[in-house]
Amino acid sequence: MSTAVEHQNLINAQRGLLGVAMARIQPTSLTPVFGGQNGPGGATSLLISLTAAVCVIVAWIVGWTALGAWRMAKRDV
Picture 1 (tube, helix red, strand yellow):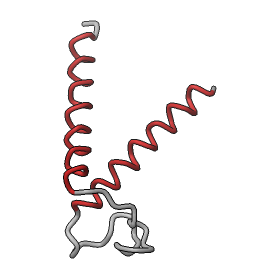
Picture 2 (tube, rainbow, N blue to C red):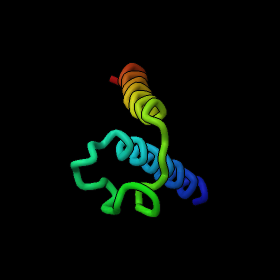
Picture 3 (cartoon, rainbow, N blue to C red):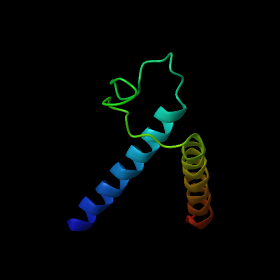
């Protein structure tokens, strides 16, 4: 049972990191992703650099695409 909990915690951490990265590149004219105010004291006050945000998003896309391709190559037909 602890493995399922650890797996869920890992997924939640990945979603949180991706959410922060997406909030960083979001235009300021849009409603904030987390529903709070951007800036000090707001829900998205956890700031990362633009470069780090783009790297996280690219790594997310490349990583899950590679995992999907590997799984398709290894599946039973």
